Image (cartoon, rainbow, N blue to C red; front, top):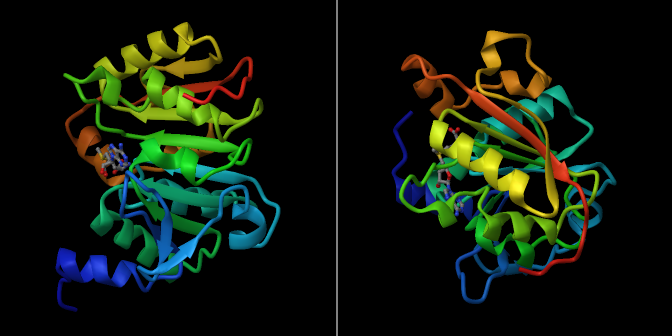
Length: 235
Ligand SMILES: C[S@@+](CC[C@H](N)C(=O)[O-])C[C@H]1O[C@@H](n2cnc3c(N)ncnc32)[C@H](O)[C@@H]1O
C-alpha cells in the first residue's frame, strides 16, 4: 500500500465518522466533513456516543494509543483523543475503525479551546500522555495554571486526572504546581512506574513517544490527581 501524504491524511480526516475538527481559535467550532457544524457541548454522551457511559479525554493524544488501548481494557467508557496534529489523529482514527472501537473518537484542536466544546461536569477522566515539556515556556505546559483552570470548566469532583511523562522538569513542575493549586490535590505519584507493579492497568499502554523514551533508558513517571474543591472558575 502506498504511503499517504500529510495532505491526503488531512483530506481523509474530513470524511472519517470518528474525527471532528476545529479550524479556528478565534471562533472555535467543531466540524464534521469540513462543513457540518456540530454543537456537542454537554451532549457528547447522549448525542454523539448515544449512551450514558463515562467520558474520557486523552490530551496530547498523538496517534491515540491510550484511547485505543483503554477502549479495549475498559470498553464501557467513551474516549476522545485530542491533538492539534492532523496526521497523527488520522492514524488513531483509522486504527479505531480497523479495531472496531466505535466508542473512540478524535478531536483535532488546540487543547486551550476545549471549554468551548465540553460542558460543565461533562468529562469523567483525563489522561495527559507524554505532552511536550516546553522547557522554556512554563505557561504552555498542560499542567500549568491556565490549563488546570480550564479543565475545571468541564470536569467534576470525581474526575480522575493522570499525567504520564518521561521528563524530569515537567514531572517536578507538575507536582509543585498541582500541589499549589487551590482546587487540585495529588493522589499518587511515582517517578519510575516500571520499577514495581503498575498502580493502574492502563499505565502499561505504551505510545510511540514512550517507546522512544524507553529505548533511551528514560524512567517513566506518573501523577494521579483530582479536584479537591470545586468552583465554576471560568479562567
Ligand atoms: C510528544 S507528543 C506525544 C504524543 C503521544 N501522546 C505519544 O505519547 O506518542 C506531544 C503531542 O502533544 C500535542 N500538543 C502539544 N501541545 C498541544 C496543544 N496545546 N493542543 C493540542 N495538542 C498539543 C502535539 O501535537 C503532539 O502530538
